[in-house]
Length: 205
Image (tube, rainbow, N blue to C red; front, top):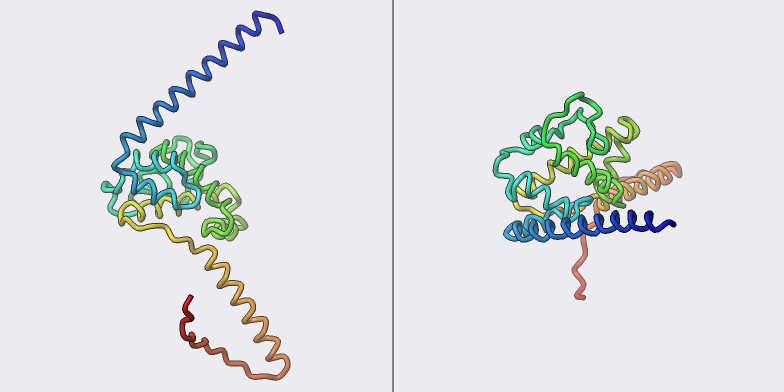
């Protein structure tokens, strides 16, 4: 490598270092500015696909209590994350000129893809159901809409996210086993009536 090339490379590396320092400084300032909203940010981070940076941006755009939006549908309309709209990498694929909050749509698109890859999550189960009919891109955009509705509920009502995906998987597995064993018994000539078991006494730990 020629000395001139090394000098140019050093200039580029110095610029990258300066940009990284500026980004870190902005992150610190943003964290300080949102210190009073740390509870909302923490609750949002419990939703699959949402990390601290995404939660901070959502709070900055929507507000820590979503006070401007009486319903989740209003928030979805404002953000441009309505059923029938789709977006890939922040670019609208359904309209020539996308409406809504571009910053929020972009982060929701990223959150949706992260959420549907979260093993055993409600969003992964939904995506697997929708992708056959809608295709991956539209199914992911439907996930983004679901995530935003949940964001509204978490912020507006102050609730916490509870994962139901694993419970749904367990319920479906139990249902398959009941059907299988019931069919096997009936095939052998038995009359089968299923009655929920009465829970026994609690055993001290």
